[in-house]
Every structure is written in C-alpha cells, then in structure tokens.
Amino acid sequence: MFDLKSYLASQRQRVDHFLDERLPLASTRPSILHEAMRYCIFGEAKRIRPILCMAAAEAVGGSADRALQPGAAIELLHTYTLIHDDLPAMDDDALRRGRPTCHIKFGEANAILAGDALLTLAFEWLADCPAPPPHVPGALARELAAAAGSQGVIGGQVEDIAAEGKAPDADLVAYIHLHKTADLLRAAVRMGAIATGGSPQHVNALGQYGEHIGIAFQIADDLLNATSNRDVLGKNTGTDVKRGKLTYIAVHGIEVSRRHAEARINAAQELLRALPGDTAPLAAIADFVLSRQS
Image 1 (cartoon, rainbow, N blue to C red):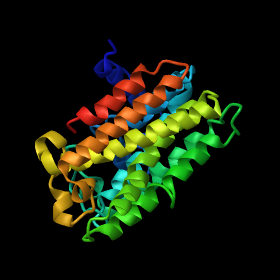
Image 2: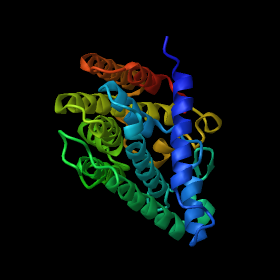
Image 3: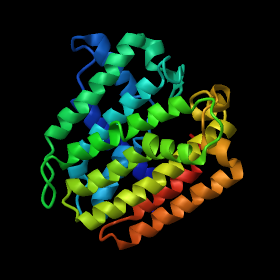
Image 4: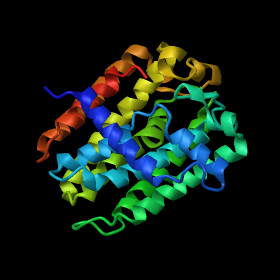
C-alpha cells in the first residue's frame, strides 16, 4: 500500500533542500528583502505544487529530478501570490501558516517587494530549464506565465475581490475557483510532464487531472474556513463570511459542496488510468485533497 505520508515528507525535504540552496541568503544585501523571502518560503508549507510537478514527471515515465527545479519555481510563484493575497488592500490577513503574515512581520512595502522578487526569481529559474522535445524550449515558462497572468491566478484574484458582498453566483464562483486555485495546480502537473518530454496527450490528461483536484482543493479550503478552527488551520477561520466573500459554500451549501468535491476527485482518478508511469502518488494526493485538515 502506498504510504503518502512518507512520500510527502521525503519529497518536501527534497524541495526544501533545493530552495534553501538556491535562494539568496538572508545576509545577502538587501538583507531585509531576502529575509522576508525566506521567511515566507520556509513556513509550514506542504509543497503540494512542486510535489505534484515531480509526481507528474514520474506518471509519464520520466524522472522526478527533471521536474525539481520547475516545481521549485512554481513554489516561488505560489508564495508570491500568498504574500500579496494577505496584504491589507486584498484579504488583510494577519496569519499565514500559523505565523504573522509577511506585511505584519516586515511591513507592507517590503511584503510587496518580497512577492515581486519571488515572482521574478521563479522565471529566472525556469529560464535555466528548457523543455525537451516534443515541446518547444520555452514551454515551461510559458505554461507558468499563462497560469499566473490576467487569465489565470491574477484574473481569479481580481474577480474574487470584485465579488465580495455580491449575491451568490454559481458561474462567478466557478470562474474564481478555476483561475485563482486550479490553474496553478493544472500548470504544476503539466509542467512535470513537459519537463520529461511527455506526450501532448499525457500532458493534457494531467492538465485535466490538475484542474479537477484544483477545484476540489478550493472547495475544501472553503469548507475548512467555515468548519475548522484557527489552531488546526494555522490561520483565522470564519473570515469568508465576515468579508462577504463569494465561496462555493455560499452558493451551494456545505453538503452539496462536499459532494461536488468528491465528484471532482473521482474524475481526477479516472484520468490517471491512461498514463504509462507510476501514478500512485497522484492518486493518493487526490484523495488527500479531500481528507486534509489544513
């Protein structure tokens, strides 16, 4: 039986080691910027996105080593989105991963710049990772840029902010969840397959898998915000209702939301059947999306 806990721990260690070696030291000038970048990167992060990237590489018969640097670049970009998401102009959160958020710890200006620096460094790392055939050399950078831009994470964030206080709207919440969360998870698995020369058919199957688990992941986040507590989750709960945020629960209710998340995970599992490599990690991660407590 596949041991997901051990797998996640070992892969997280690999990612953490890579990040620790490659990020500028906190003592490197300007030290406050590099200290802030490291502070945010090395919180209690699960590293789900880089781990998905490496697992996808193995699922198409490739080596996880080829996906380590692209996966680490995704983690840099993901962390930038969290820093900016927590800012007073957006969600105005004081806690992230059980610790003060970046702007609380280092000031708002330094938080903005730390996010900017992580975003920029992500593409610097990807510039050193040309994709092998049948993909064009710049495919990895293009994949991440598309997932993060105005029609990806940023677009989802804009609509999320605009939706606060609005009446429940199923189409709008689906758009927000797809772009704010699922796009980056979809990119992570697609990039893992691209990094090892996976076929377009396998890349697309993994992209659909990533979209399904991404939607389920955000539904689970909405459920946790509504039903968990600060000690377990590592950040404040009940904040979605207080801000009038448009969530899956606001539209569909708790029980229907759970059923929709389960259906997404079942669809994701089906897509793994056609892949030629080891899909046990991806299957277990899909199940974990529903069972996680934080």
